[in-house]
Length: 168
Image 1: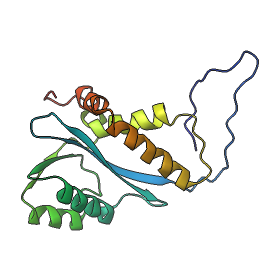
Image 2: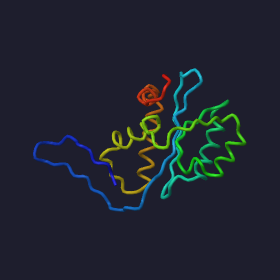
Image 3: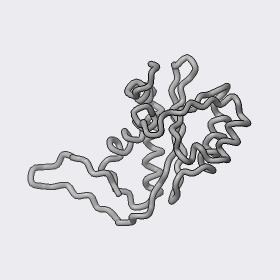
Image 4: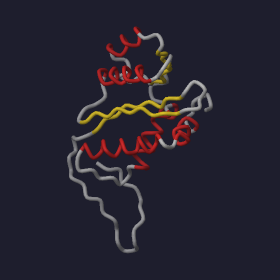
């Protein structure tokens, strides 16, 4: 279902958003904001999955992707979500000492720059967007990811506005 927000319209012409009601279709996503060691480059990695929740195998696949594309050691800032504590994920983390893990409190979205990114996409850029299919959602999110890649200052702002104890 789309997130409906206020919008502009001519006086007396209330805007309408047509929606095909399919309550069980969804797209789940996992993402990482990647900061270079000297905090000069900001990049975004996203993985989208149609019709399913993010569980251990999806997190593992995403970690493998990160390990291939991020040179050198990296730090993961994670909450204590069930998919992060999955046995497959923990086994992979044990086998890869270059991946350092920092646990955050169980529910602290204000400490997670990626949560700010998801909010920006969902309640800002994709507000009033009424897709007909899950493929339309994926296409829109991929388009926004490409747009964000051209605006590293915006990616930096997600870190600045989080309550993390370091500055970028």
